[in-house]
Image (cartoon, rainbow, N blue to C red; front, top):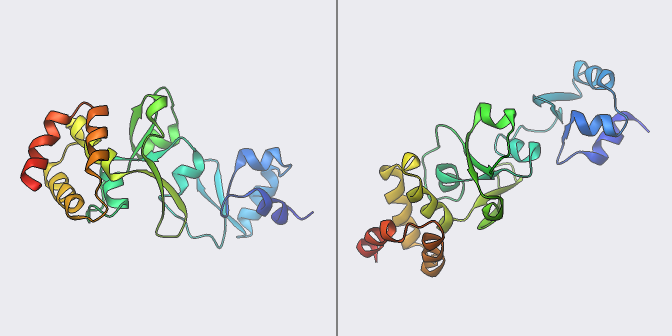
Length: 194
């Protein structure tokens, strides 16, 4: 079987890792030849893509690790509750998880493993790839919980957008406020906006 066909079978939307290649009998030498001939490209340390794949900067971290969830201001932006592109992407991983690839390029937050998937929703990236991101209710409460991430100029417009949305779920927001112990912090905002 031709190397490229073999790689297409185990690739993830056109992305594949060095580890996957080695596990499926594709050598470093094969990868180097394919890269030199322009059939594949290196997109990150240990991660490749076919030449025709448009690099999706939001999807690549989640290809590198299934433990990555977009959070905080990045989640506000990706879910449409902020028009301001974050200066640096924020992701959340389980406590104790370390990845040099992430720490180098992202603001990484850690959460207890049992809370990692609480409030995760899947949305489409700008290139139609699936992204794991926290729901707006969890995001609004987490931002209040972490004072160093709190940016009032971004938070208030996002909360106003949420309160004006027909999809708002106040009960869900109050559940997350209780979970992150920010009930007293969010109450004044809600009283003004309701």
